[in-house]
Each structure stands twice: as structure tokens, then as C-alpha cells.
Length: 435
Image 1 (tube, one colour):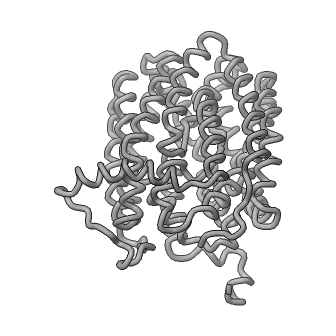
Image 2: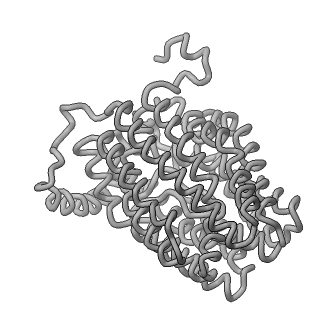
Image 3: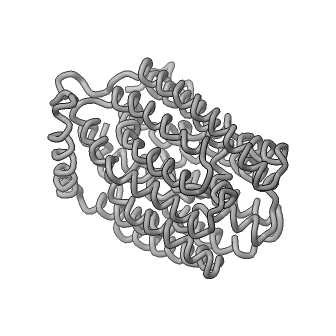
């Protein structure tokens, strides 16, 4: 039962681990959001081509695949917090090549290393799901994403302003982006310290089955990958259906993600400043709608919200090809932001409701926690089963863009229709939500 005083506050769940996770997202997502919208342009400025933009992003996704099962296994068997804290230090340090890169190949190295150490993500996602009661997960997941979005809303414009202040051309972009990555690196070290000090473990001592030591690492890695097959056998038909939909979507979302900004600049003719304005405006809309949409997930159920959002998505994606000028691109990006605002809390709630707490680390390492999400830069999120498709999509996307840029959005629109049909036919909500 939820105490009456908590029921009177719509945000009563923003305590303990949830509060710490939100604060950390605010700090780090703001610093990275200054620079990530321009990462594809940074690759081009350092001598890369659109095909190499796809290659760099593909290498990052491939790297993420290697250690995700290890992170999920450790999270369930040995606890979440220490893994999250210490791995965040490693992840932050691996951003140093972004600061000192002299060519696009150094960015490829940085992208590979940083994503390699994102293997703590399943543990952090499990910690987040553990800390949210089932009845408020729609609002909870939406709020956890909305608050950082509110704080970082001006971040892309700050990045665009700095690039323009340094001259606006490739040389100015390189100087500005390096400065921004240096700030993001320092912020990452701070976030790691906060996570390690203030997060509380959700796995009890009785549930801890092993201790993490250097001598035990080979055995842990072996058992981690063996647990992948055990987890696959454990999945029911509905969860397997979600995986299939995520794999299909990951392939085509990753194919297009790095090229939204390049298409806007090269084909539509937008400036860096205009793209830097579009992202915060659409972000503000997402923030305004986040809590109401999350509440609708709790009221209507996640499946219904996913179906509505997926029905809207193909049209919005296809119309990006006909967007004219600043207002046209802004309208499409805002439309897709609303779709993301519906799907993210719905998928997160559905997946959390299906998976018991003692399996969340391992299952999140396989399929992620966000479901389908349309990205306007790097491909975010995912799990071990999604990374091969996403890596292939990122690499092929660069080749397709060089051949005919319009094909990317036509393919993504068609793939979303397939995902809609699969969702309607095969995804069903569990009779009882897992705590």
C-alpha cells in the first residue's frame, strides 16, 4: 500500500536511488548533450566521410556487445552499485581520445573503448527498475528521463554557439568540440564518485551468490556467456516477441541515427545554430508531455501506448524527406519526440513488469530497457541481442547515405510498419507486474 501522504505528491517516488540516478543523469547528460548532437559533423571535420561516420558508430555498438552479458551477470549475482560506480570511472576515462583526436580514426578508437565500458548499463537499469514500485513505473520512467531533459534543454544550442564563436567552419567546430569533451570527461569522474558514494544496493546479502575478484574473472566471464542461453530459454513468448521487434528496429534506427543532422545540413540547408535550436525546442515539448504521457501508460497500459506511437511513427519519418527549412525540420523532430515520449515509458514499464528482480540484470543485458526509440545522433541503449543488428545498421547506413540519402528514411519508415504489425500480433501484457 502507498501511504496517503505519498499519494498526495505526484513525484513521491523521486527518493533514494531514483533521486541519485536522476541527479547523475542531469550532470552528465547536460555535458554530453552540448557535444553529441555534432559528433557526426566532428567526424567529417576530422577528415571522415559519411561512410566513415557509419563505421565509427558501428564500432561503438560492436564494442558494447562484448561485455554486456558480463555486466548483467555480475549485477544479478554480485550486486549493482559497485559495478556501476567503478565502471563509470572507466567509461569516463575512455572519452580522452575524443579530446585529443587528430583524425577520425582516433574517434573510432574512443568510440570503441567508451562503449566497451558501458557494460554497467544493465546493472544501472536494473537498479532503476528495482527502485520504482510497479504502480508508478510509467510515470517514474518518464520522469527519470524528463528531468535531465529539462536541465539539458539548452545544451545543443550552447554547443552550436561555441562552434560559431570559434569560427563556425571545420577548424572552429574541432576546437569547440574538444573543449566540450574535456568538460564532459571531468563531469563523468564526478558522476562516478556520486554513484559510488550514494547509491544503495537493491540486492540483499542473502541474494549475493559470489564475490568479484581478479582470480575469479575468467570463470565469471565464462558463466556470464553461458547465462545468455539460460536466459533465452527462460523468456516467454511475449518477451521473445519484444526482442524480435527490438532487433528489427535497432537495425534500421541505427542505420539512420547519425545522419539526421547531416541530412539537415547538407540537403535541407540548415546551419549548425538552427540544428542547435531545434533540439532544445523539441526537448522542451518532450519535457512538457513526459509526465502526462507516463501517466497514460499507467492508466491505459503500455501495449496500447506502444501501438498508438508506432502507428504515428512511419508517417513522421517519411515526411522528413519533404521537410523544408527550419520550421519543416522542427515540426518533424517535435513529432518524433512525442512518439519517443510515448514509447520509452511504455516499453520500459512493459519490460520491467515482465522480468523478476533477480533476473533483471541478465535480461536487461540482452534486450535493454527502452524498447524502440528513435535517435537523432548516436544509437543509444540496447542489449547483447540488439548490438549485432545495430552495428550492421550503422555501417550500412553510411553506404546507403552516400548512394542515396533519401533511402534511409524510406527504409526506416517501412521497418516501423513491420514493428507495428509484430507488436499488434504478438505482444501482450503480463497478468501480474513483477516487483
